[in-house]
Image (cartoon, rainbow, N blue to C red; front, side):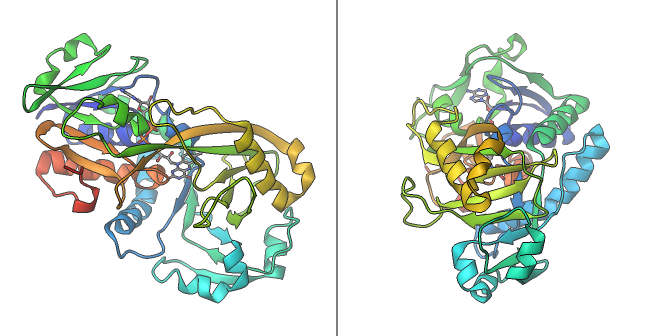
Length: 382
Ligand SMILES: Cc1cc2nc3c(=O)[nH]c(=O)nc-3n(C[C@H](O)[C@H](O)[C@H](O)COP(=O)(O)OP(=O)(O)OC[C@H]3O[C@@H](n4cnc5c(N)ncnc54)[C@H](O)[C@@H]3O)c2cc1C
């Protein structure tokens, strides 16, 4: 064994990181305050999309994530026998702007790869027979996929256990505190064999709670905001493709147009999910991961705009999760903490943790162990 690392947080990011490190022969203890995947990862709706272009480091990261996903799904199935529900099902874009000018929407996807073609009203009627909204035009986008988030957690957890990661769950919150001028220590119900953790490297991958785990760490707070996202399950057969659409509502203040964007998604059980794209900013100290009445009403209004009023009776589940949003421009927060070489960060994946989490885990492992530089735009602000 080369060395030992503690990973805090067992969502898609922490589990992927623990697996990566273990595959590099590192001794790994993975600690979670609750249980594996109990944060945003389980609440995700499992959409993976190739980026429209690759002209910034974050879009390049998304492209890498997109390309690595089929390999990861196959590896996990081979290692564990668990099928994570990866399916490159393609997407249908029927956003308002796309319907107005589909050719322009095609032009906005210069490097997405795969097939992109305009769909007529007749094509859409045939592809989406349960949709009652009048559709004029849309796009088919081949490079969109979906995965089953719960199966993903089960497979990553199993892969970690099989390779020898020690997983410790239900520990309650663990904090990281500064010691002296350049060291750290862990405070909380840390397993006793990790008592001398001051010598070990620690990676904080605790989703939105990474900020609260580091409250007293100089030089500055981790720039991370909690943003709630909600979704519903519908007793409506899965669409053949992921459908992205707009549903403007008075209760949604939306200057950029992103908050009125929703997705109707083929669920792993053959029924369907419907989720919003952006979600609601939450109070920083005590955000709630409980689904809300307002969230349900907004999702229902979006569903009604596709399926009519009777859809209310077809809601079979409603849930929420807190997305970790990095508050500095450029993508997730990855790398070592300024002035504390023992402490590494892997969070801030916001809306794309399933897509890029496994790729960022590899980046962090390579940076920690081999000194491979992480793009500057993801680094922790000093
Ligand atoms: C409704 C919704 C839909 C989404 N849909 C998609 C999607 O379609 N595609 C996509 O790519 N992304 C999606 N996301 C975003 C994605 O879920 C997140 O980016 C991703 O799950 C973040 O993973 P994480 O491992 O960083 O955090 P989390 O999954 O939140 O995991 C953090 C873990 O850390 C633990 N923890 C917390 N504090 C501590 C502590 N102090 N010590 C130890 N452990 C701690 C928690 O218990 C938790 O298990 C969605 C999110 C939501 C809410």
